[in-house]
Image 1 (cartoon, rainbow, N blue to C red):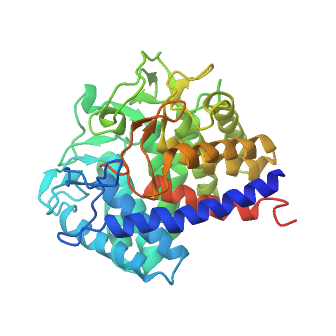
Image 2 (image 1 turned 180 degrees about the horizontal axis):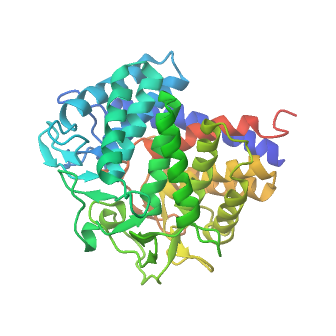
Length: 424
């Protein structure tokens, strides 16, 4: 079978998985009809978990998912209803009317649990609420997205060193040191700010949003990408000096169920973040009106690093983490890195016409459909070992919902038909 035929088949499989698996699963199981908002905790059999608390990360990712899919499929009114359902709860219970911004977590009923102002959570709220207005026309989304944006500029901007403080308390005071991480910055959070500001500017078309998007892109490219290896660094002090990564409170790395544990060297990189950054940069450039080749130099290096060290050529799929130069250190495989790798490798193929990237995409998809996806349930498992054995089979949890899987499948279906020669 030719490469083009394989890509066409993959596109059809992915579209079916999105529309017959991921979206129906979350429409059926994710709507909290009793209290509002969404339920995101499901074990490997799709059974609801005991943790029904609601977290800003997954509540906003669900809003984003239903909004994005409704924008793509405007005849599917249940998607719109699900998005409105989530926004109604979110604005009622996550918005901090005293301090501004959104809380980190609330109970199932909406009682505040943790009102800290983590920039990671604020960024996903901006991203989701702007997407919601784009999809539905409801002005509440953009109104609150802009209010959160303004709070970030007032309280989270590091006006001395550049970029943003990432961990702040309820009243927007910068958090303490150590695992509270008030003295650290990361590629992860700045990348998601870029993602959020891209959608905010797409929705508002305000100059201030474009300028702040350009600013955070510059911080990432000039301060957070290794000029030697071309990959992203992990954590920095507030002056952007690279420092050994630690587990930070209220982050996925601190809370995830882990498989392989190793003593990491000073400077590691995430293959998932690198390949995700590639396509998010291209999306930002598109929204800003830049030429399609604007980020190709940095994008090529990100793609090459992931291809060289992140791709498992024997079993398929993408590893988690490794050094800047050399084989992966952590070879277990999580859902989100593999989702982002599919989109990123397709983006690289579209930009550079290098078939190695298309082959890499197919290797990741083949691993995903045979190992990650529970086809009876319709969603991806959380964490596998290198060969695809289940370490954590969670279908959903406080960090895992519709966002990485649904978004990646959607983005793939948008990219593949536009690839050169696919309609020949």
